[in-house]
Image (cartoon, rainbow, N blue to C red; front, side, top):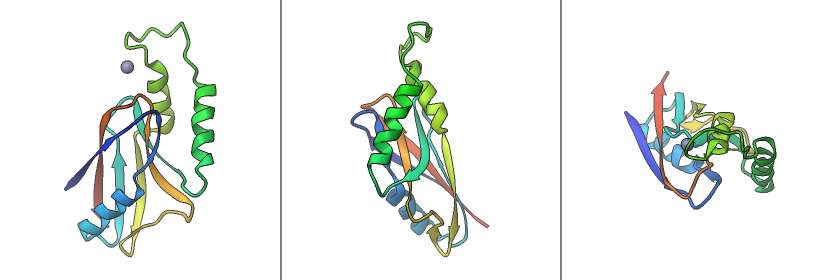
Length: 131
Ligand code: ZN
């Protein structure tokens, strides 16, 4: 079974989906296994990073802007090549081990949906495998 979640994004940013993913794990009844979170969009991604100090996310967005600025040489007709590049930098999925019915995340880790071309209504998938 695949859980499908939707998310209304307001703007470019990182949206913490950890509690939604934890909820899906609880609902699945799987106590030991693997959880995959997958983003089916080309201008958004999934990553795991710190959820304690929000300045980390602010700094990541700043660094992505500095690393991947818009270039007049870009050819993509939509004009949002930076969003595509940032999405690939972050990746489309995250895999987390499930142990004793809980996500085996580090103390300061959270799972983020990364929006690079919002506002949009987005979706992401959660697949939970026992094992
Ligand atoms: Zn595009």
